Length: 444
Image 1 (cartoon, rainbow, N blue to C red):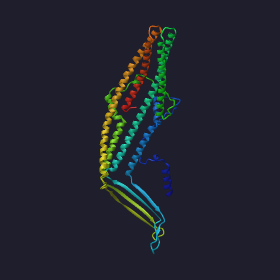
Image 2 (tube, one colour):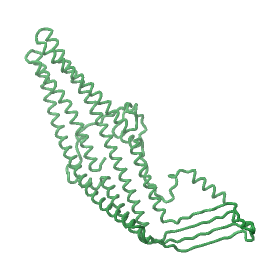
Image 3 (cartoon, rainbow, N blue to C red):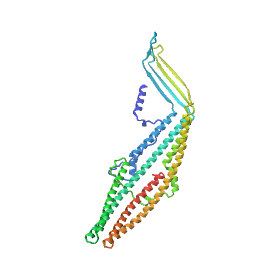
Image 4 (cartoon, rainbow, N blue to C red):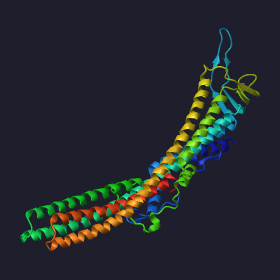
């Protein structure tokens, strides 16, 4: 029998704590379905990037471990409903010889087993369990909120990098246009058809366009580093992005009813659910603090063995069983103040819940207005670009045949460059505003 006990003990010590779950509290699982792709060689879509980040992001992994810790705390709370059993033992060689007396040896070893089982405590144990359960719910919802925030961060980094790459292409196209204007001004200056001022102005605009290309190259590197870090990669990792297929539905939202969106947000946002769970936990904590001033009743039992191996009575056995009542009659008023503190925290949490609801409604309202503005800006930017392209073609033709001056040409080229950049900015701002709107109502 002793061999079996030793074997079970050794197995329990060898296994990690998380491998044992006798009370069935571990239910949350880590993200599954990680993408089996080489992020340094294969093109990654937005869906791929999100899945990789969910499986590798250390901040999200930290929040997941917080949930697992809360589950373990729930197991500790459930254990209050089970009896406590304690084993103790001593072994020693001791004796005494009184003056003019005989030597007496004490018991060389003894053992004792004690068991206690809380039977009734006016709901305190149940309140503590509800508190832990509510805090676990809050941790779960907090984890969901972190997950949604990570998804939005990946979307933002992805779209920002695409925007930076397209802006770089646009700035290079503008550089080519300025180079064409500069070359034409140089040719006309050498022929004596224009003044040195035309040549210098064209050269200045060309060099400014070259500076713009350098700045956009820096933006690409910065946004690429931001995206790599979200995937738990080194910032210098080169990531190939698969561009999405654009159509009209890509920029449209499912519903245009902002009031319905606010209702959806109040029902779906994990931040509200986490706060409501925290409020339930504070309420249960207040109940638990009040029951701490009331008595509790426990069943107790014990059995002991004392060995007197050299005496006429070599061993002794003692047993006891009964009921124990504990009542904290006075503790310096600490229990009273603890109960008051818990009640105030509960009321504070109620107010925080209401404040959070209004805040989230305002987030939805602002995100919706930003989306509508971004949609209108994108529509206008397309019209402006068409006009700027036509204006630049006319201005260059006029300058080429000597009917226009360099100022008009460079102005037209600058307007075209701005129109190109504005369209890129407007398009990706529209996509980002749509992502933020969906995040505000609790959708991925």
